[in-house]
Image (cartoon, rainbow, N blue to C red):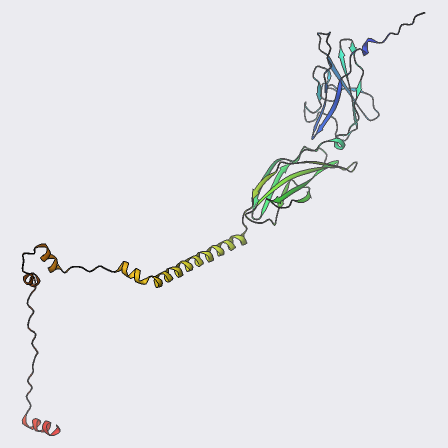
Length: 320
């Protein structure tokens, strides 16, 4: 007697290959490679189910999870695409399984390892980073990689990696605030920095260190003391320069005073009478020299005659 083995046709479809779960910041995406059938003109569809720890399997539809991943032709299921409330709770233990379907046929289930979002997430860098240079400081403001609904369950710490351009890198942190001030920096220096977030899940005491932000560089401003020092240095420098220039000019004047006197000496001029004679040599030279000359008035000495009485004359003579 011959025994015929009958396999259920529901397992004739191949299973989807290489399924993987992407947990990046708030994203929760399951993707896989498509199932290819050469003898079918109808598209293969896929079904995703989920369950929490020690629970039964549920359909991933609008009623259960807020995202429809039942009989879809796409090769991924984005649990965070519908709305901010969609997706699995970030502190729940979640298991997913996937299969391909074609009419009444379907493949075997492919079950992925369980995950907890806070435990397995890849944390990106802080976003919307703004840096304001201050007086010997840099003020950094940013937003968290993703929103945490319940901060009593999980929270972010932040670190700043910074260095003077060409210098040694330093790390400052952790900070709880989204606004960080790097103080005691050198004025008028270029500093480069990167910001990093770290996720702390209080429930399981798990830390997830995130990616560093892109490097950005900024120049610090001068503080009040530096500005005063600059004013003093500029004043002293200007005075010193003027003193050096004055000393150099004095030295050159002493060394080349003969040449300078020669340069600034007024050249001799020809008397007007000689110039007129040169214009008209036919004139007698003596007449030219006497031309326009007026005779000088005779200068007379004034003589005063004083007369004395005879008695006074005798007294004068006796005195002499």
